[in-house]
Length: 109
Image 1: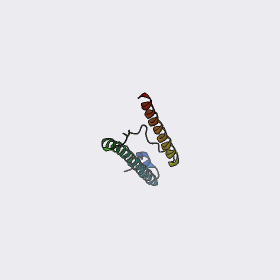
Image 2: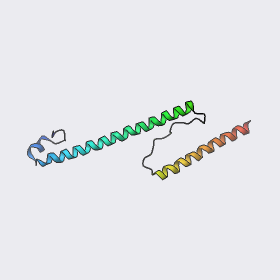
Image 3: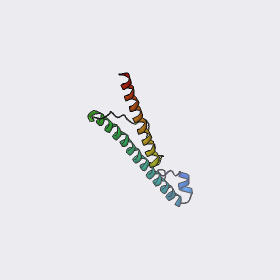
Image 4: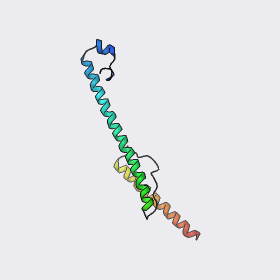
């Protein structure tokens, strides 16, 4: 058990017996943190898969303009307000691109 917790034989046999419980506590906290990281990564994979499937279904059955998969990874370091501003900016840029395309089609005809 001590080896599982990362304790050396020398520490186990020659140091304070209470040290085993400190190693155990540290090991359990490390395992809990690793489980949280694994859980987050599983959730993140699901988010990307959900996004891909949603877009595929929308493009397959939707009657509107085709949507594309995200162009860059999600940034979780930004606040909700910053993300909202960026989404609005991207939406405006997309509308401008569509407007330019419509104008160029109208001028070329």
